[in-house]
Image (cartoon, rainbow, N blue to C red):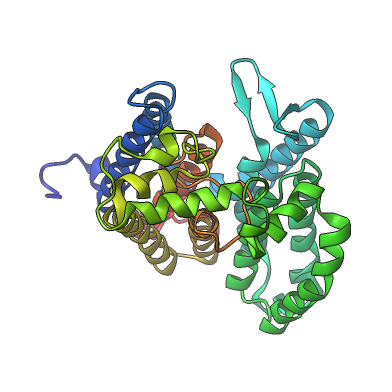
Length: 372
């Protein structure tokens, strides 16, 4: 946009990513409108309102100074960890899982907050760690504990998808911090060795069914494989141009489970076809490319790790959800950012966007990026 038209603060807003992102949210609202049978209630209207509220929150975050963010990293981690402990003690139960805290009119899922907070805490840790210690136990054991505590608490809820998202964000920050590659290779081999034990003794029965269904969806097409089967039917039936807005039979006739949350992409693909799917992928590509650019241009180690971790968090949401609805990954309850109906998911992803805008602003004012 023309720098002479907008006031100074507005010139610092990355419109090149916020405008496509707003388009994606509006497109998602249209899909939710259709999923509700041609009504703004109960999904589309609240989706737009949440985006507007959390966009303001993201803009506020983008104006925060570096020293404040770094000083708040560990207190924020401790606060969210205490909220996770509170979930175990007094959390609300829904769908067989104990994941939420009822705070008056607000229903909060603390595990969602841990996704950006773990990245923030690890970025603070590695920024303070001398570069010469990145190949010692000091670079692995304390961060491993920071990641392991919330992952364990989330697994108890149980919520495998969120636990994996927290672990993924932490692992990406560790990788970007320069930890030896052999450690990651060893962790991968250890994971492969532990996987059978984890399957038989660590997963709930319904989680085991999700894994076996992923490997052979047709083994139980009316039971555990129903979600994946109906999702693939919806996506395939959309063809190139889709059946038309409001004409999706899988969602409107209640064949497709959760058409407004986890399987919103299948709902969209049935009505908008391959063209709609490519539009969604294009916008996500713009967002992720911008995030990587912000990370590359970051003015210091803390900012670089923070931006890289936030981009990875959004990527995890997108990749796992799309793989899930297309039958390329087990169903783990990961919503599609900015399109699925859900306040916790929108909040988490807008926090990531706000922090990326903050780092982007620091890059433009390199004299005030944060603590050295």
